[in-house]
Length: 294
View 1 (tube, one colour):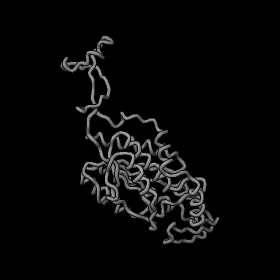
View 2 (cartoon, one colour):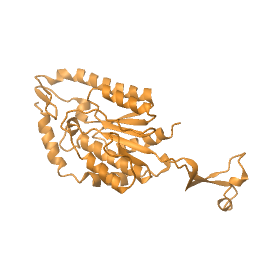
View 3 (cartoon, helix red, strand yellow):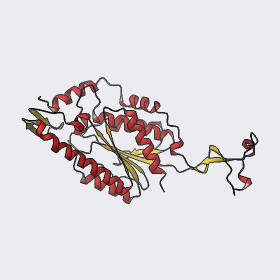
View 4 (cartoon, helix red, strand yellow):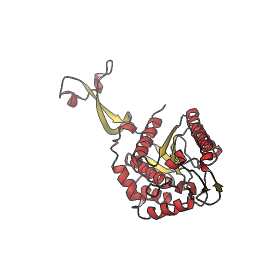
């Protein structure tokens, strides 16, 4: 079987041309996720009402909401939401390697990463958080205009085969999202996560891979070529490469998991034959869990 990445890339780009706009698809994805706001809310001294809860033993009767309590036999306390505006900063890998898809009917890694990142941004902006980019090209901000700015930047490709995470503009205590296939050398990833941790930022690594990259289904004569064209390898018996490739892939995934465990970050591998919604849900709740850690 002879397969070239250039043929796959060409077909993927032709199919992508018929897809609706990134912003439209991201809004549709965000609207289809019934999250509510509770995953990212905590009681505190803010002005916005959150919920009623029972009066606990030992608490002052001055805390009782008598109007709500008059509806039954129990005493209730009116809780307000803690006003602690959070900041999320994202980096989405836009290198050539992300434009791979092993099936012309399946989204490229880049397309999946972008639509999930933009949908996540929409959800975060809806609950009042500031969202920006970790490379400093878009400062964290709120509002509908920020969604359009993010969409514009996510639609920009680079010609490099691989690019490292950019963390130079991270703010202290930010929630950080790095989305990539993480196929490039891991040292810059370690450095970026370490820099973020030094600034007391918490975050997540979302690795996006195509099923072909997880399975390595190649046999016989096969030409392997990077999307950017800088790497080229021809094998007469590709099946001989499978074990070594899969071992290296698992070693990389294990290194990413270990990095996150050591720094308090979270790691998840998303395969593009799974739904975009599953990646979005994981990201949203992972950020909520991280944001509520002491």
